[in-house]
Each structure stands twice: as structure tokens, then as C-alpha cells.
Length: 101
Image 1 (cartoon, helix red, strand yellow):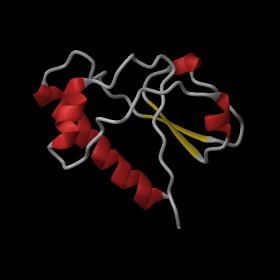
Image 2: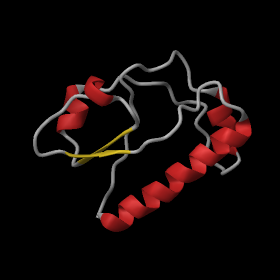
Image 3: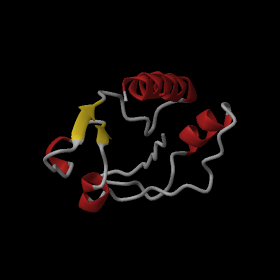
Image 4: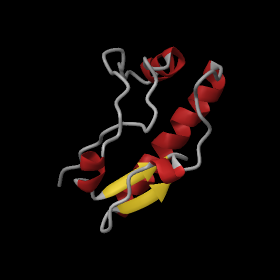
């Protein structure tokens, strides 16, 4: 089985959060080459599961796609210790999601 993961937002920033880059680097994950991406209806429509993080009505909706809203704080402007907690929370949720699929 294969899982493809994409990251996009309804209001992407101009650059990846430098604190998030640092938090991910601590885990051996280099996201320095990543760029914020606009979420499109096509991306949502071609997905089996869409994880939302508080976008509400701004997120495109398509019947037949499973949506799960993860209530997480926005890491923008947060100190590294808070971004670490968000990172770890997301990691735990991803592992649970994979087990659920």
C-alpha cells in the first residue's frame, strides 16, 4: 500500500515558517526547500482523506472525500518550544491516522 501526503493551505504564507524548519531539522527532516502551496479543489477532489486545520468554509468540499479537522494552534509567530509540541502532536495524529487507514 502507498500513502501520498501533500501539504497546502487556503492562505499560504510567503515562506515556510523558520521556526518550523528548525523544529523539523531536530527530527532529521529538512524542509528548507519546501514552499507554501495554495490548496486547490483538484488536490482535494483527488484525495481519499483531507486533514484540515481550522480552515472552515475556506476549504474546498467535495462529496466522497473523508474530512478530518485537527484543531491545532497556528505555529506562526510561536516560539520553538510551542512549535515542537505542535510538531509532536501532528506526528502522533499521523501515526494514528495511518493505523486507521
